Length: 86
Image (cartoon, rainbow, N blue to C red; front, top):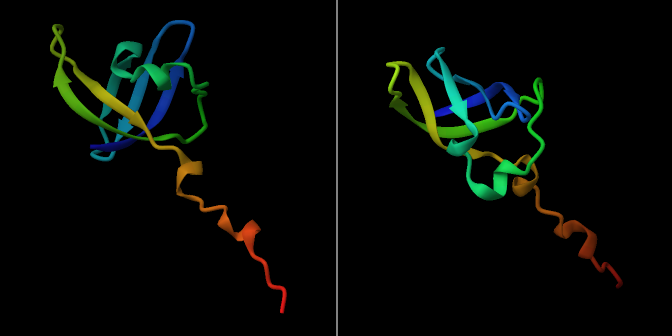
């Protein structure tokens, strides 16, 4: 499923994701891949994510296998290598 970080508190290690279905999903830091746990996730950054949904022990919906979509990965910066010498 796709969604956006609604809020996330690094110091507490959890937050919520607003899913594309309009529901909010609890996200624990353990649901983030190791390399993404160190990224600075801030509220109001509008970070897009993909995730899977599971039901937690308390019966609430939780996000798992969360992947932060890197906005910079889609930009190709090959235009600086243009050599138009004719």
